[in-house]
Length: 257
Image (cartoon, rainbow, N blue to C red; front, side, top):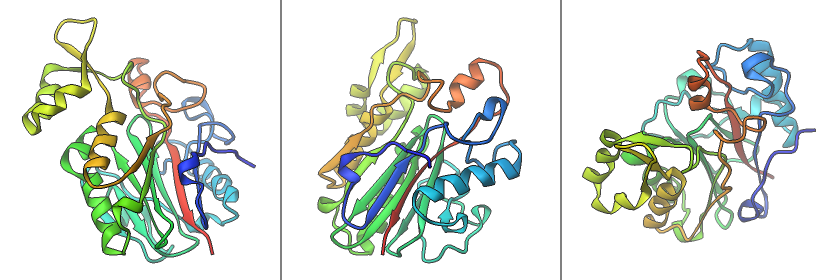
């Protein structure tokens, strides 16, 4: 059985979760080995087997996993059944209060955020790249959870493996987008060794946005996808190596009966 990474702040009553690494699957080559991305160019049967192995960790079948067609948006959707096709769910966050539905997020540098409010039985999984984080995916997710009765103050949020501040080099134009949004965002950029370039701290930026919504428990695993090739897929690392595709990591959370 796979052993995903877990965080103490999400080890809550009747809630299970896992940030899966790239290890323990059947995919080959650049997808080696637990590639769970339907949108990749990997063999579909390999992806299906990988997702099946991940669901086995939760003692669920493959049909229990719900993932979306992620578009770097600020759209969050409520999930009430397992019977969805990923292509029919164009959004970047999934929220539910139904048991035995494994909400899944697929990433390869962007931040997977798993959220839980065990007091009212509401969970969520969000995909936050820079564009989604800047445009409000975090606020949309917390807002939809609140509609189901989840008070932000009692909601725990954990950021999984994400490109880290020592690996995320960006240019002036990128930084300016954040400064134009809020002058205080300058805090999340440190000067790079290269002129006119900056190192961006995406996890810290997300934690600040979470805290601004009223979430009191917001943490990060602190694991850099770019820096740990044997553990995690990385879109940026593969681009730098000249590869035309990349594997996707699965992060998932489920309410248990």
